[in-house]
Image (cartoon, rainbow, N blue to C red):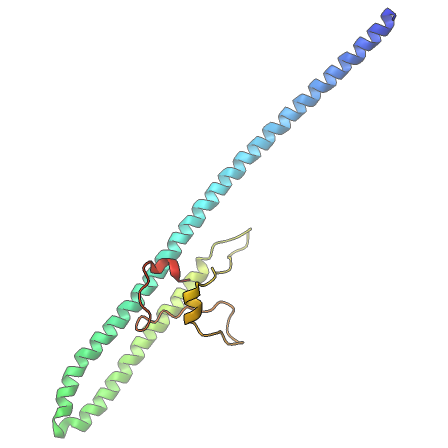
Length: 188
């Protein structure tokens, strides 16, 4: 082989080495860029996980507060009935006061039931709107669909009517529904 052939081969090898070095430099640059993007994605994922955890904690607190208000209202309603029953029973035992006492009792009971019913309805409406606002976002959408109800909730609820909204409204009636061990984990 001649010197010219060796020099040509050496030049080709030098060019291949330079091309390989440039390609390796480009790969390192791309790898650095991908590593930075991965770190940013991990940070964004951790931030999103923290937001979701905070949202779940708010949702749990909201549900607990809603149940506490409903239970407290039911308790006050029953105590109110018991206390109001004392003077009405005494007045109804007196022959001359029986009819007026029954009329006043009916009026009293209608008014108090209306007020307690309004409080219960307001509590449910506020709770429903808060639950809508506390739904966890998914893939950039404003709000995700609510979590699926548990088997006990599904069994306790009547089937929704065809014209009713897609999200069934929970009906935590404290008079008939016992308190679960962890109420903030079972309602939604």
